[in-house]
Image: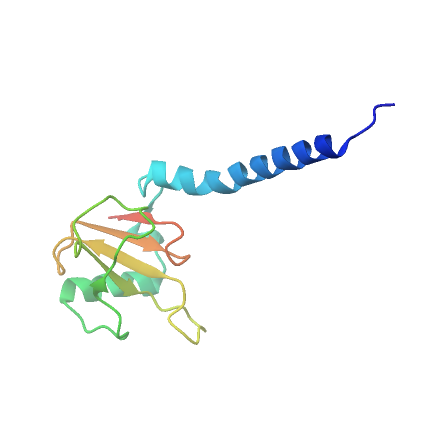
Amino acid sequence: MRRVTTTGVGRLAAAVLLHVAVLLMLPAAWARDNRASESDITLSALPREARDVLARIQDGGPFPFERDGVTFGNRERLLAAERRGFYHEYTVATPGARNRGARRIICGGPRRSPDVCYYTADHYASFRRIRE
């Protein structure tokens, strides 16, 4: 029978921790590499509340939430890199939520006729490009 030494246990633990760390980082790395392009969503597939927000964006408002229209900083770096102020965020109401919830639309370009818009249902953890 092979005897396990303290040094061997330490090496094994370090190897296991390294593998766990790599596995935890993979989803974020994949998201950064694929940006938002790996999954699109059609306008008709969006929740009704999101379609309402897009209509308000094209109309220039009004917006029910104080933070609607603020600059989105793209700190997650999941969207294409653009100059500061290019992206703006808008809240998509979540039925039954007591706060703003996790759903947002992020649009880039001119405010009333954006070049691109994205939908996130998980508060910026992932984005889906909105297609007509």
